[in-house]
Length: 410
Image 1: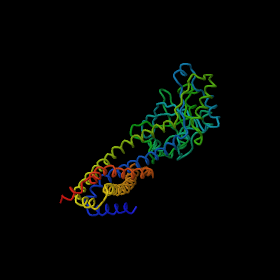
Image 2: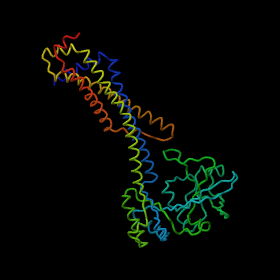
Image 3: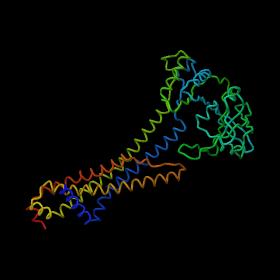
Image 4: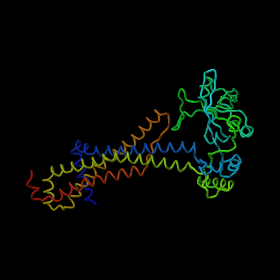
């Protein structure tokens, strides 16, 4: 143990004697470690923020749609099916949105509309916050009342103000017109990754009870797709299987694959896998600088062996073992990379926080770097491994020097 400490002291002394050269040697290691930690932490932070926002928007949701076989067999989803699905213990809400193009005229001019026919559960499924008034109710849907809901931004586009609850909006669908009373105004989500944006000429979106569109578009008692909100605390796949089993039982179509599922959790997993692959690839590219840094360590250690040839000869002539000489130079290489790794870790963490702060302020969202202890430990171990690996050749070269040949050199 005492001899090992002696090797470390000698390595530190030699490093301190050549501060400038030692720092330049460590620079590649510093840049590599800092880049990897910063990229991984930013990627992890972005993924965590995205997952949090997506979970708030669509956690526990499943999308069910009719296959071509179901449509050709006229086994689409009926209004009675929807009520049966809504009665399941695992189900919190059901929506079957259908969108139609329409037009309207207000004091602000002519506007194209996207009229979205929905159920009363649309607000919960879309995670909408009310700014004025209220969303349409189950009674509004059952009675097919002519009420609508729109966002505050769309309200200002149409009327110049978002305080429009109780006002009427006339929509024209082909050659037919209908007046809808504005029941509520939703708040536009300003913060976050997933924000809806508007631009000039973009259609105004209004949401109406699906039953209120029957006199404009015909029968609204059957549907080709559904969005089902399940209890987020339960297994979404199990809930989805129960919904499908219910539909197959009601339509006596077991084994026909009439009804298909897109599970929100599966889509989220695929998205996370893609983000992890991108982060890993960028980290790999950044990690190439570690290889360059390792080559720099090997180069400077070879220079050190050349400069200290006489010292090596004296030590070997005094009885120093080959293993002792090798450990001395390996310790120096390991210390160089360890110091570079520590500096790189500090800079990487600081860079992660700094870049996330810039992204958060510039994009009006809140991203915190995902600093993992495992990432820091891996980076530290890898930097030390680089030093030892690239220090082996110079150390072996020093250890194999003949004492006589070494003492002959000046």
